Length: 117
Image (cartoon, rainbow, N blue to C red; front, side):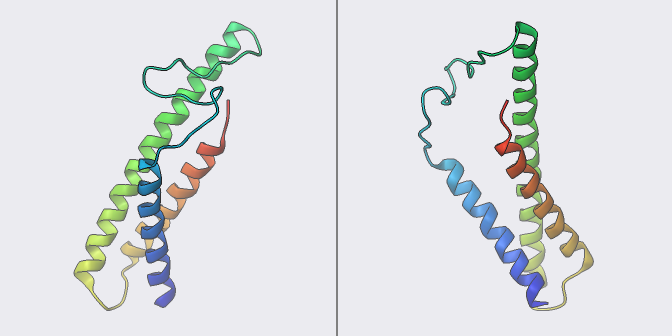
């Protein structure tokens, strides 16, 4: 029981910290920095087809990160609402499954963010 509660608290904290961190301004070197109104990351190696494929893969990765993050936020809100409603008591199997889904999505997002093209 306490292990599940601890896991839920850790996951909620992770999501909160991730939201706070995304609001922070991150300074990247000029070769890596990219934002609205800026040109895409320069890819200097390979032929034009490889460059195009790398850019398409990077865009797809960013879409997947956004989708997974939105799903993780939704599941976290649902889990929090359930915990607020349930109070002190036995956790349902549904709550445990939501916590596991949140954990899998967090690992997926972290892995995709580490990828570089």
